[in-house]
Image (cartoon, rainbow, N blue to C red):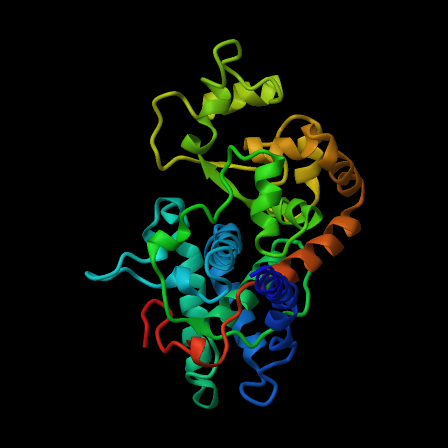
Length: 329
């Protein structure tokens, strides 16, 4: 029995060790070179058109990619529409705030690809989302990078699978690290990806506890900059339209830069899960480093989002290429 248990544990640990490599091995840059050679330009053009219509395209697409990858892997399962017999991921409470512009970006880019006869039904929605994410980051001033491609679209999308898989705005550092580690990502990866909040926005309800009822002794979170807290209270009164959204970076909200980390140093992290990156000694030095070096942050971000794109990749019988990103074939 003891020997069997030892073998079982070894097999499990070997599988966990191999998993990230196995997922990334089937992805490669220029995957579509002989399938749909111009695919990245087609996607970029479609994303640029959407970007010109609304800046929300940027945070909406980045967040869609993140929410997709953290639940069952990067397989476009978050884009699937619910049906009478299935409540899909996108209708889980944690996904209801995903902006429609992110979904629209992917759908329009996919339509542009499929309008090219030789490319029709040959590029997955999961890969379109990965490319579109790279493009919105570059369009808003962030780094451009080569995207690994070759994902298939997932065959399942259930709201129940979202439970406990996405970080919450109230998380502390241990909770953040645990959730990211479950996806093969380090603390540095987590901090880098949190930096995408430089172009994010949030509804008031997600941080109202920090400005009104943080604790019995401190109605306002003491780690929050006092002037910033006053500004937030003005923008988010206790009785507020639930559709009101606030920029997560009060200084350069439309630029993908390292100002997010400078804001944390000033107590201007919107969520508890943002500000804790500076208040916790274990992550503070990384925040300080990236606040003073844009290039160091950008390099770390590219590394982290590339690793994120390898999570739970579907191949073979575990996926297919959807003709309609919002519905199973």
